[in-house]
Amino acid sequence: MRNSPSASGSSPPAAAPAARPAGANFTSRKKAKPAEQEAAFKFVRWLTTPERAAQWSIDTGYVAVTPASYETPAMKTYVADFPQALVARDQLPHAVAELSTHENQRVTKALNDALQAVLTGSKTPQPALAAAQAEADRILKPYR
Image (cartoon, rainbow, N blue to C red; front, top):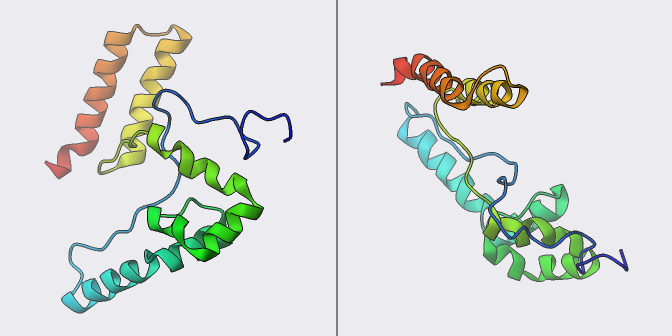
């Protein structure tokens, strides 16, 4: 790490957009009862407070969910001893959003299959992407 290009021992952030950090989203069911929705919102508000989010990041290794998390005493102490914990946060300005839709895995697979077909030479880009679009339309038809 002493010869690494950054203090954290990792490469510096990418200069161009990159893949988004892995993780999940908070969700609530559309048909949840009002009391269930309020309980879910209360839990998310609690979980995303700077202190709680900082501790969750420290305990799990995931990037903290709010910038304020990095300003807490616990996180400042942690990153002083383990600067690698800042790498994912420092790369966020260069990240891009993920594809997000109903049936996300199936739609993503259609796109990935098209990309693979182009890369292996079994299809040219235009027909491959047209096939991916047709498959995505078929998958998403019930949601229209």
